[in-house]
Amino acid sequence: MKTIYLAGGCFWGLQKYISMIPGVVKTRAGYANGSTVAPTYEDVCNNNTGHAETIEVIYDEKILPLTKLLDLYAEVVDPTSRNRQGMDIGTQYRTGIYCTDESDEAIVRGWSASLGETLTRPVAIECEPLRQFYLAEDYHQDYLDKNPNGYCHIPRAKFDMLP
Image (cartoon, rainbow, N blue to C red; front, side, top):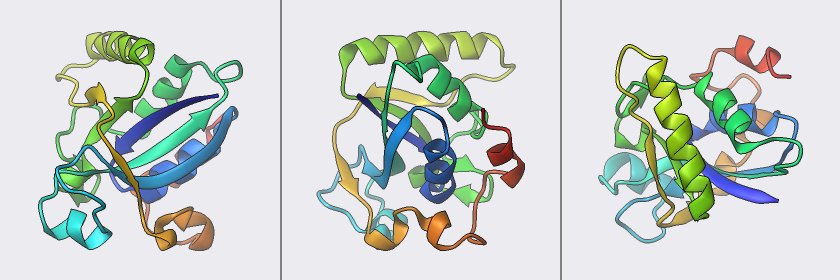
């Protein structure tokens, strides 16, 4: 199993979408790459902690190669938008791919460069090593499973388009 961390706007919709991809074993919502220790949701939203709403993705690379996972991720984020996705605005809603494995970081950087060649604006997705990840509060975990009509910046039709 491999692990990677993806930020892309509100983590509720991203977690639901990514969890539905064949080959994804587990996802958890949390906060990554900020400047404070053990932030709360309130801290992240109100206190300029620098954390991004992020999901931890544990996946089987034999079923789901990293580049395929990233391609699907790019289908539900605006890869050229800085510090916002949909109506979610702020640094906590930035896009980012955070790695714990140096070989994954090279793959991510190559993927990002290839993506950039297909776009008319520069890629705004951060590609960095994971500095830290703190789990979000329980009520954020699998939020859209608990609240099927809850807010989601990802168009619901995207969920139906998964392989």
